[in-house]
Length: 565
Image (cartoon, rainbow, N blue to C red):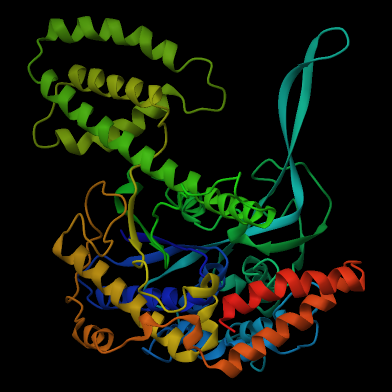
């Protein structure tokens, strides 16, 4: 038996450094736990990510499976190398082969070079077979999921009834979906250049922040990618254009749940399944009660619309998980209340209640095409709830009556195969990260900013780990987002936070603003934006007078204000 961990990593832009710090500490904790042969192993079998989180997820998956040493070292692990040492504003402003200056402000080629260095260099010089050295926290196979935004879109058909010229007839309703994803089952079979070249491209597409980076083209196949499994309309091999997955799904927890279900095939697997959600921002209110369309100009309305769309993209997944957990907890409470009553019932009363519940069973489970059958639901629930009567068994008839009642309650609440989920979040408080400014791009301006945020990620992950060890259910540090039951049974020493506590106590970096950044750097960014603006505006067909006026009276003012120039 093993405990399984699914890790979901949100979009972050330069705050990928924070997420890298979180992941480093989690992997260290799992490594320490697994080093004790008396502990039940903890394995990561699912990694999902959006935007910067998707790029991190891909890197971590490869190193977990093949190169454990790349995950060691506080300031030498692959996450630190990628998000603290490698990515910076000077590189992002450079021109690289393959860059399209007419469709982006920053360099795709620079990001590609980093990905090639940290992922594809494994295949650069050494012929197969490659030496593989998996991390102790790696499952044999890892399901990788990357959130994507498909600019072309993929069609999905729904069968409906519609009124034609003469009568009501079966018809097809077509919905084009732009929220997309890239999924892959990774193992030793996938340790090839071609395999990881495709994953690297997908991870860059996942992180192609709109306007900052050009869209990434990828060839997808209906048969071999997961379009077929999700009932997309069949298409031949197609080339699609993708941008940042966070546009439609910045919080890939739901994708992690979907992929975990593919691994959790036993009825009680949920008891050993745990989720970690890594994000530099808390899920707090983004409501804007001061917005007034009567006093706002067109640009302000457009900005608020963009914020609304982005915020909504992550709403549903969190709502669903929270709602399901609340309902499941309530169902368990009702089940225990019923159990205690059935201990007291006579055989005659049990038979009488069974006569009432049997027709309800038939009605509740009838006509549900494709849904779980009553027989399967009964077997699953009987297995799940067996532990609750292990010490004090019910009679066989009372047990059947009990499970039948639970089955009806579960079906009526539309829970079905949904299981209780233990979800840990590692988020940051507002104003405690440096790179959060400039729409989370500020971290790219200075390595010390990224180092600071990386250390904050480490510290917050330590707090979560210590919360798990102490059995906390709530914490100001964000120990748990959803609190259904038992903690992950980590058996390690408590994390010593004293060094990091002292570092942050003596640092004032979190108090800086954009104007504190080196002025020559801000000047370079301004000149770069100006140059790209005129190139993009001209390519878009704007005449010289219009593009010059827009720059002088609108765009320039906005850029100078953002950069404190």
